[in-house]
Length: 320
Ligand SMILES: Nc1ncnc2c1ncn2[C@@H]1O[C@H](COP(=O)(O)OP(=O)(O)OP(=O)(O)O)[C@@H](O)[C@H]1O
Ligand SMILES: [Mg+2]
Image 1: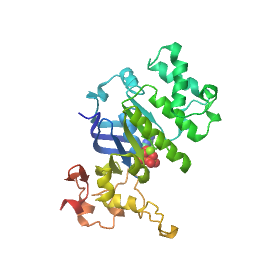
Image 2: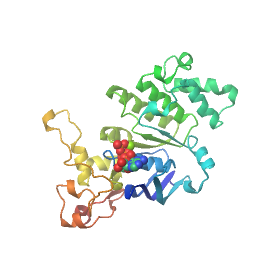
Image 3: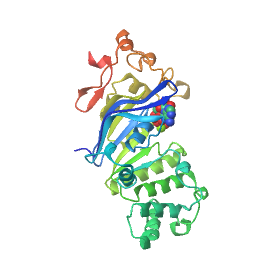
Image 4: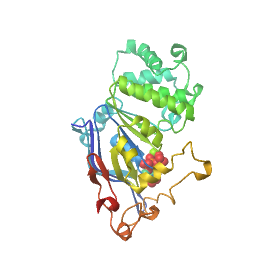
């Protein structure tokens, strides 16, 4: 039994007379102790997928279809109160922009302590001690002293460490990390990823890791799903994906990775842009940017089909 099982999830936004199909029928699972990465360009539906799992989609957005089972419990059937206990307690999420998710007016230590108290992880009398332990655990120097500092006194990397401390405060089984390092300097990025990896291993968590960085995927993920325009285009183990990417979109993403042995003027980018979700092309949604597109690709959308064990692709080139 998977820890998280998502079936045919559709999350649409209704704006005026436009329907924005942000997530359009995706299925995936996250196994225990596994890191599943979701990759794709900006606007492909990664965050909306994560927010749908957390039940944090608000009007004009709506989950219109699909099942989200966590530990065999259908999350959509829970009351908001029950869902609050799942969030932070069983599933935690860390966001792209740490400054947005921390309260600027409350000291970081108190914010960690609050997370502990909401979920009744420790008795009140021990909560401050535990919060300081957590700050030490995520390697914040002089935790005892810095407990009382406001978020603004910390660097971006340190703030992200505090977010991680809050996220793991209640020993969740699943950590959803939405672009956890995008807002940070490159050197800090790898430190934060290393911290996440070690937390995941020490606490036996599963991780849903959202990123557009294939380097981060290669170093951290067990399996990968590649999203484009609200659809899964390819799904594979990390080894299979890098060894034998099948979808032209995945191949394009890989060509975009800068290589140490190539000069800057050879940097590749996939031609064109991801279309606005109210204007997806007919057929395969990638067809207008695909060098290999044929008439069939412009007419009919291929299904996501398993080609080898665990390796699925949505592309006519591999179906026929
Ligand atoms: N609140 C909203 N209202 C309207 N459209 C939305 C809303 N949230 C997301 N969308 C649209 O849904 C699509 C998917 O958005 P999403 O935020 O999931 O992309 P993403 O893959 O996370 O991109 P990024 O890498 O930039 O974070 C986008 O076209 C976006 O414009
Ligand atoms: Mg996003």
